[in-house]
Length: 226
Image 1 (cartoon, one colour):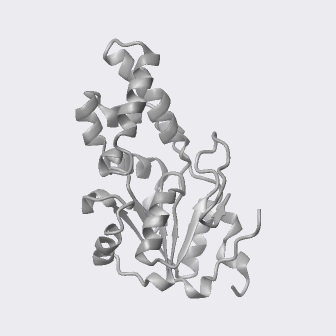
Image 2 (cartoon, rainbow, N blue to C red):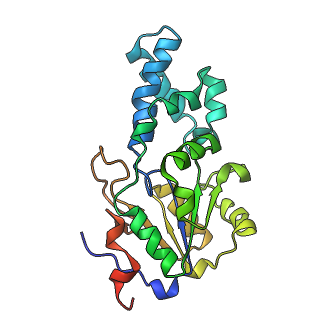
Image 3 (cartoon, one colour):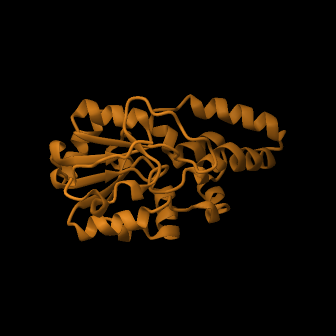
């Protein structure tokens, strides 16, 4: 893969997705595709395969909406304690490679690092508790506070109200292509994706956006004068 060169001298702010970007998406994939169907089948006395197929169809109906990420919505809709079930597999929460080093160097270089996530507050709290991620960045912002997901181009106006950033001097790193398209439409200049958000899934083919496998590819001190 070609080396990604980041013009760090022209970047003041880095907006960072959490799941699939800073943290391995495997936790979330495993929860929604494996753990939840199994526990749903147990709770509702269903066949596990039948539960998995039904849940997949039900969940996909909400893709791209805030409900997709809302644990309160799924707890009520599915009649299962989603947050409690997530805690059952919390040991699977893990950083992606070189994330801590990357965030440490951003701080040393005086570049503001802000997590901007669609994760529900309960899921965010769990992951912060397991990783201490909030201590490694300047701020953590949850899209649920704006009542719209990052996929909505209007989200970025809402973000500007609480986290003023210069669109021409901001880098967004996010594994979601739809979020990156939303940010591009809004006018954020520097956009970067992740080749393999889930360490247990195949690498993805990158089409519209530049992407990295790991954060050591773009460490500011590794980019010389760029």
